[in-house]
Length: 137
Ligand code: 5GP
Ligand code: ZN
Image (cartoon, rainbow, N blue to C red):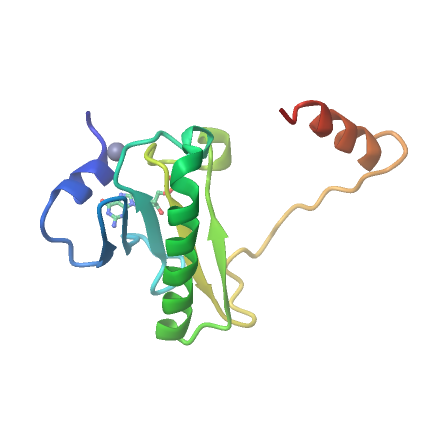
């Protein structure tokens, strides 16, 4: 399979490698939104978050938190974003499940222009809550 993250995982060396065990690897993003921008990736190939097996979650999120705290301390960041782009519409570009850890600083303007919507009487918050509740199974 032609997957850039599988090739990184299967190589011995990566300049930006941070962590590796039998389930999870973590390395620096080649195109950082801020220095220290880190990816946390399962060793096994899953296309995206939708495919993540439940039995991976405990280990995966424990490592994600541990690595995020290390990134924050190492970069002396004031906080961080944890992002998992899922699907082309959500800007996913590598189709091997991964989370981004992006160090953030006060007023760094990394995500400058977000287009927030408003609920109102024609598009109500309640109608969306109901639609989503019906899909929980
Ligand atoms: P996505 O857009 O799928 O959420 O994120 C994929 C990320 O992988 C991007 O931020 C991109 O910069 C990073 N990336 C793509 N190719 C490589 C690579 O060869 N090496 C590393 N270290 N990161 C990569
Ligand atoms: Zn892969």
